Length: 279
Length: 313
Image (tube, rainbow over all chains, first blue to last red; front, top):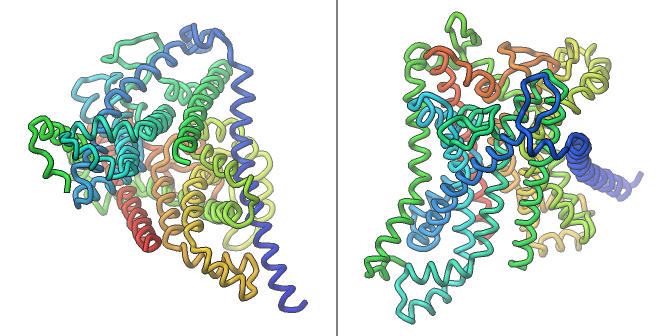
């Protein structure tokens, strides 16, 4: 073989391998999603949403408690996490723009986004479960909100930075104080972006299991009392999947199906909004 | 530059509120560190630092705790998953930036992002019910037959393939971290100035030579940052491995053995710890994990920032 042929062959092989890598990535996605969809649809019944669990080993029953519990915990986490995140991001992008402190907090928030969520679970256990004496729903909501704050904070900061500085100057020129400029001009300009960030952060925490394991724990009964243990879909999936009953496994698949579809739709919606707004 | 506008009292209040909100990030990190130190103080006093990190004894009955089996499991699964994930992720990034026709770039990018969006508990379920049987029935017996008899690497493939083991957990972890490395690598590749690439093409370089000699060296900081970020993610991943790793506090050499990582131990034992020193030892483990992943993520961030500065010049 000539030198040219060797180079061409080497290039061909390398590019083929890259293509195979991309196909492998797609293969995993299709494999996992397909598997969850197939197993999930089989066990998806209306009863799953309207019935409470039956005692272990008894057929029938549903996961109403877990669906409602998950919803309540996620909403509470959003109510805590979103205001703190948005306001914090506002400080970084507006009042502290360009300062060292803004840079530091921004970097720390980026690190917090990836900190193991189970560590946050142990932290919340220490401050909100042990002193109270029992697992409770608030602890779960706070744990999720701690995961949420850095995500919302960083997206808000980025989205506010995209609003042109001249727009603010125009408002200052009309004599508006800074807080009015922020709330009435900057927020409006960045609303879509911030909303997308919130959607994606909900998608992020809705699938979290580890921080709920020893905070909101689980509850086999329907309960809206956030001062008591509250069932969540993810913890229920963990418990049911590791359990010995086929009935449990089927319900775990159905719950996985619902939660996966919910999160993927949120993620896709977020992407579409960004594409539509910022292209 | 901005505070000079704040003469209005409402403005000062609004600024204080936003400042307080943003400082929660620092307070959170401080509080986590403080609480974990505080809760693990009894265990630190009893087992020390070096003794805790180097002891393989994890026995709730005799109340003797050492973290080495957990740390070993964490590092082993992370290392294997990185070895599997890095080539695939870089291959994906090369495909998306250099090979793929334009109409495929978007969909493949979205597909990779969806892979990152799937909750880890779904990976765990899938691993337990679907991947694990495939591993124990087909792939692991095959690997054992191929490599089990070889010297040196043979010890990696001993024992009965059960599917609930280090190899299965590492494969699931690798699938989970591919998206992080791939998307950061892709972004870094995209930042290579096309003038430089075109110059190489003009000299007669093949596409692969351009990737190998121009794009990869140019974007190595970003790619490296992406890899370290994935490493940090893999260290702390809990649910995906909790299903398929067993919870086995022994140092094992075979990939077909069950093991324990820090996260799996916490997930399985935290709610059941029935005495103070046991719970304190678990908090100690959480502290070790927090410090480990915080440092790793900080290093990743350092490289990504340096990369950013380099490209923006």
